[in-house]
Image 1 (tube, protein in one colour):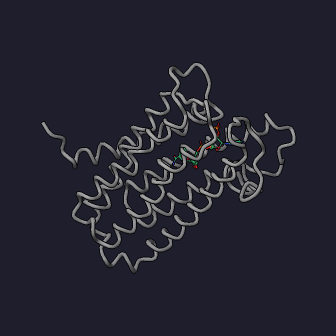
Image 2 (spheres, rainbow, N blue to C red):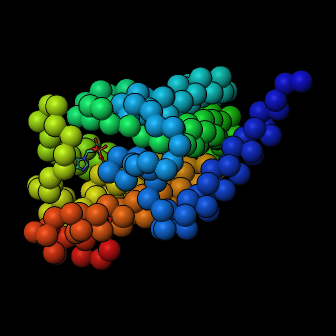
Image 3 (cartoon, rainbow, N blue to C red):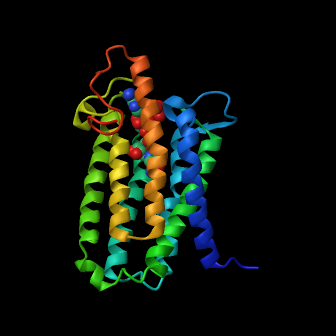
Length: 255
Ligand code: NDP
């Protein structure tokens, strides 16, 4: 018995929507057990660098495999959207983990498995939407401001995300594993500009693609990263008595 792709498409969207609905309330009370919030009591632990590659790899690979099989794969608008996705996820799955200064660090296997499942469902749904489903992503979409405003938003978010990742990575010298107060860039205003950039990116993608899976992914990203930003911000305030008091968690001057 072979799986019906249309059913898989629906199921994967339901999974992403379900995970978004559960993630926000759960993470407001319990910080996801990876990075600074990792610790005992979450079952088996796995190598942090390897876990990033394993959990993120389906996002570019499954996306590309699904996208390439679609009838719209060589059309200009789907190609542009595919390019945005692949640029982000080639960085996140294969370049970012190799740059991390996290020797000896571990993440909970549970968090890795959940992220892996999420990435499978999310990348399949988004690739299928763009390459098989969406009838609006034809040449006329090239003249729709949503495409270009969304693309600019995505590029700005990506730049903010990568610059902030860079600042965080370089807080440690090679071999170090401790924490410092980040300075510079958007850290002047918020504790987690890397998450702010990520949220802006997927808002831009949702606008440019104008598909349900892209909207669900944006909502999931907010549900995931807003509570994480609040938890990180509280953690900084508890750990560093001299932490800048005017700095917010995620949105300058607001939150
Ligand atoms: P963090 O900010 O927690 O950590 C990023 C890296 O920097 C880690 O190696 C961390 O070390 C290190 N680091 C962080 N703060 C400090 C500090 N103060 N001093 C020294 N080193 C520090 O980010 P995440 O790991 O949560 O996320 C990484 C990227 O993935 C982000 O760009 C984020 O936007 C993206 N992401 C996207 C999600 C989505 O839903 N779309 C979900 C989760 C992440 P250590 O690991 O040892 O703490």
